[in-house]
Image (cartoon, rainbow over all chains, first blue to last red; front, side, top):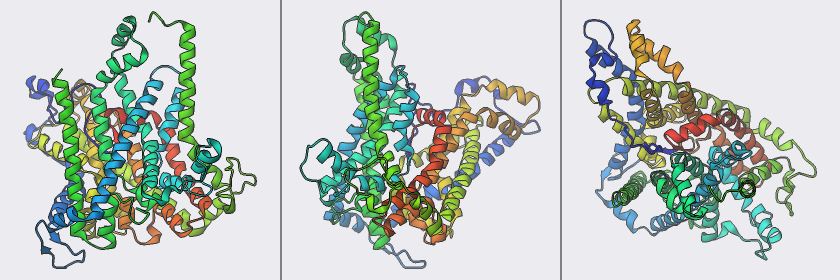
Length: 331
Length: 281
């Protein structure tokens, strides 16, 4: 599960900003318990309310983030009391020089380049279709969202079954239903067809999420603009291109950042649908890290790969947001 | 719109409707086929042409899935983990959100943004160090260990979600209660919690779905088969009986029922939650 503190609403996010205006109105607006030292006591209350959540957060998230960086510089042995040797950047160098790691990165990039635009285009289509009043709108919303709430384990196994070579539903549709291929395709038995199957699953599972977020963004698109454009004689496609998409930009940036992060997080589907196979050809960075770490107990090396991935994802996300901001300022 | 005659509008609505029906079919057909296979004897799992209504429907897969392999146990494990995670996540995140939304204290902004950092780090990436931490705390191979990490991992998002909601609540209510002599704890219990039920519901639904579906962390830390949760058990079924698709899907469908129920009941909250904070399941 990934999430990011960006509000979808078109107003600027004010997270972390204390409400200054109310502060200016005087201390009485802030809750303070009656008694001798209201201020100090209210601080203590605040810390007490915050403490359990923050402590858990530190143990479960913050310490591991720091530890990941630390472990990546060691030849780390996962046994209690083991002596770990400092190896500097060796793990990083090893990762960058490892053809299997490079292959996994290429796979992740391909997966990203296919699934992110795929989910955005199709999700936007669904959102536009669901935008106005329509019989059964709620039912459609539920149906499109069902794959999103279903666990990755179930849908990965399900797609493994659907993409089976002999007797799989997909092959039946292609061979008998549409007649576009003569022979059943051995989807999961070579690199690119297996990647295609993984991408289909990724897009199928994500359309509903993308559509719901974009639907929320669409409520912020001023109707008058649309009507004015229609009066000027602009057709539907042109109105979408010139009115809807520019007004949706903030939401689209948010969605694409989330989807890019998500695409580098692809893990369970590869693990269960192709098992990285055939012969490691569909491995992605996280399955690779996982295998190196827990099957071969290369904790330091696995951590280095994980840190590299985080850096790549952060750079990509920040880059996307900067490009989007520049485009906005340029107007 | 000048060109919009009622007739044209009807045609357009019909076209939209048909397109959506086709799209929805693509979404739903895999599930229907899974449902069909779960009622077929194993020999017919790959029948050609595929049948969505089995010729000789059987509930043998469900019987076997439920009775063999401790399935009831896994279901109870998942239910316990998901329920405790949901309750703890919602309560602790609400407390933190209340502190951020309604108090001023040194380090407030810093602490908030530190927590938000947790949202930006891809989950599986810190799996290794999380495992090391869990081992140090003796929280591997235990259901309470799962709960502990699920709750901790959910703190950032849920605090963010609830804080936004609390900040939009009218401050006058606070003041009114303040005058009545209610302290901060009473205000939290008697004012904030009851009034923010929709937001709490969103938070609870996401926590439940997340914990119920979680696979990677459970796979990494749980070894004892008695402590399997459903996703582990289902993946394990597939590993053990690679060809018993009916059995795997019967188990999957039993596992999906609570998710579908929670989702249908809380559908409006799920949508609202996605639209305020946005989370990806």
